[in-house]
Image (tube, rainbow, N blue to C red; front, side, top):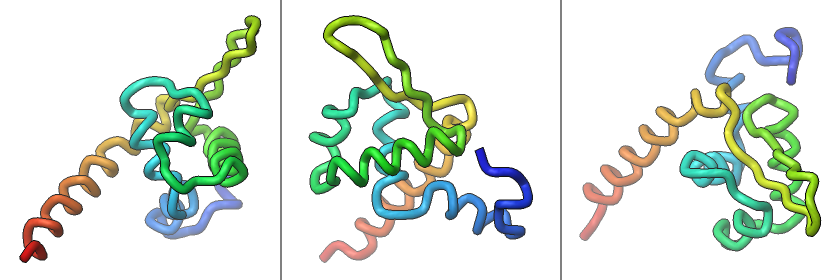
Amino acid sequence: MKTKDELPVCPVATAVALVGGKWKLLIIRNLRVRPWRFNELQRNLEGISQKVLTDSLRQMMDDGLVHRHDYQEMPPRVDYSLTELGEKLLPIIDALADFGNYYKSVTAE
């Protein structure tokens, strides 16, 4: 997790630093429903590469937003879920979904 000194002064810039980019918000959107396995996420997030998904999950784990659960069984099984801190982003996801629906409704021809 980043220290206070490593984060931008502006709170909006801090949030963007944590969840900015093309894929992180979509990963969080999926994880809100239930824990997901890596391959499930990759299949659902059409167009994301294995490297980008791995990097995004690692960054969000480092930032305390996502938890990786290793079941220590054979065959190996791992899944990802939101932490309590990550769940604080869900109202933002809801607001973005509302705006996306509104935008589509006013721009539809």
